[in-house]
Length: 209
Image 1: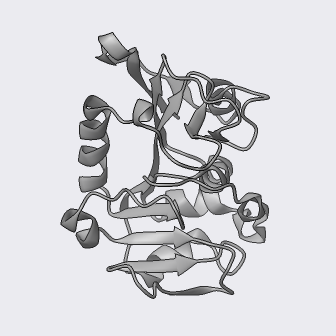
Image 2: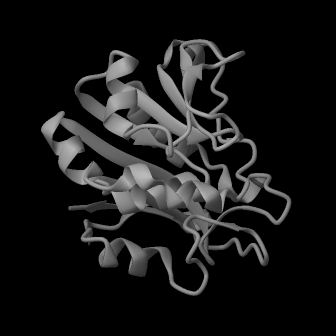
């Protein structure tokens, strides 16, 4: 992922009411994927993902998750940038800069969705996605939106040696609250800690509802 700008306007979608029930009825399982610094940041103060957040062990897990997803959801600057395979993945780009829902003007196999325009489940149906895993990959505003909608699973990796003062947080409420506090508040429970890279203190916990 290249940059992860804040987009708090996305969080105030009137289309969020009843989303959890609709997702369940449609058979969707929404999974979040993020790697954060020790202080809960997904990018530096300029919105760039630094080398300290890029670890091959985490990247392998991330790629496998995306390969198994029926749909990727992210903000305008949070594309995973994994080469030709990315073009084959169906994706929904969340943006409040358009009025509704439309085919993406430049990305292959992609659509653009304003959350205020229609419910998320309806946008999925219009894309031909009626079941399966939905992989949400950032940035801050999109993670915050789907935290309210309800993640079935959130895969939270952490680079424990890296601190990013003034960086872009995983959720809008960070750093006032930790990512873990927010996941607990929204009904998720932590699974076992997996150590991905002991030398770099990179770990992974999958939080499940």
